[in-house]
Image 1 (cartoon, rainbow, N blue to C red):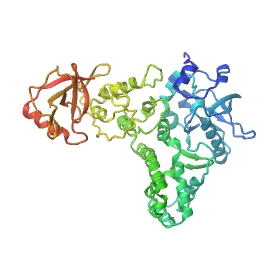
Image 2: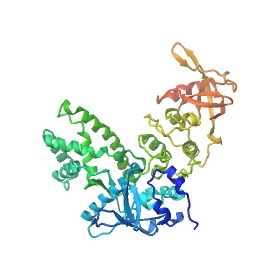
Image 3: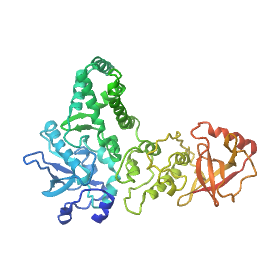
Image 4: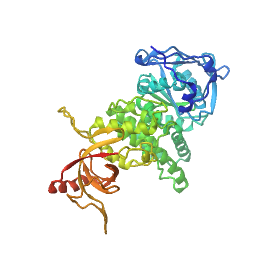
Length: 506
């Protein structure tokens, strides 16, 4: 199969990654076969004689042939300028300082937990040729499979040498309440143990130290969300301490319940606020994991809405990082080429959602999810890059089990959405604010700038549209999040016998 090629300079512009000029002279990478889902693995040397991390890059292998035979690593990459040198196949390799820390902590964990096994890892910065743009795009396309196929995933929450006091407290807590006992008895004993020790200042300090674990930058990164959700056997590393996800998931709900510490008075109010903030961030991960393991894949729009607080060095990862976790297959292939701008990707994903879901729920999303890119997008396309917190309406799924395909909506050309709807009225200013008196004779195609009320067939409610030439721009929802907003205009539509019109929203 032809090799996948790309220039080192163009990749560095797109992916902030440490420079590795030595690799351009002594290539350690050979082309992968995308058709076989090939990946590379890494053998980590466990000896620590000179303090230098050494590893061997193994030959490429098909993912189906190595399932359950390697350990995946998840970490926050950090600043590409802060690097450390390791040896890969005897060649100096600049890695993220955080990755060097992870590999060091992994050596300690492995020698303590699996002393007789060789340590075979998958680590993205080394196992993916970061200077090959096409390879990077291909590999991230099946990231979920890489993590779900691993025997275990090591998630490193620390970035430097830290005090493991909080994690050690958690382990002792779990052991103190008979973890092998009955399920309900365990939670009863756990709550009793926490209540009876709340007045102990040392116990409280250790408890607070546990929440330092949740201040890790790992919880704010976009790609690690999929890595965590997809993994089946997880260990959290924090310095030289480790705790399995199974243990953390058993204890965490009760700890969250008591996270406000009402027994200690106002002296710790500021600390409580910090704990509450980290709780909200971590809860998003924890609840998502429990739901995914129980129910399965998510709805893409819901996920894009709920994950907007997460960060990524490339804005397009705000979309790509979640494609492996959704139940719909929108046919989106990660494309990191400079031509595929964030605006182009947002229009593409909105178009695919409309055409595949056969609904216009996205009009509600677009009216609420507005950001810096909104002025450069068609008005019906949500700007999923904004961090503004909004509540979206429940999404609907159109039943097409009879094989019928609705005539509308249609994409008539790039960025233009053709829909069918009822013209209800024109915006007028009155004593009580703007209103839309129902009128059968006020629909015209030549009223530039005028705001009109429309009921769009297939959309969840009425919308205010603004005339622009012979097209419309979506201005806003007419009734906000009011759940019965649609019923407010159903009666006028029926009473006045309004005619359905075809209109284009740009």
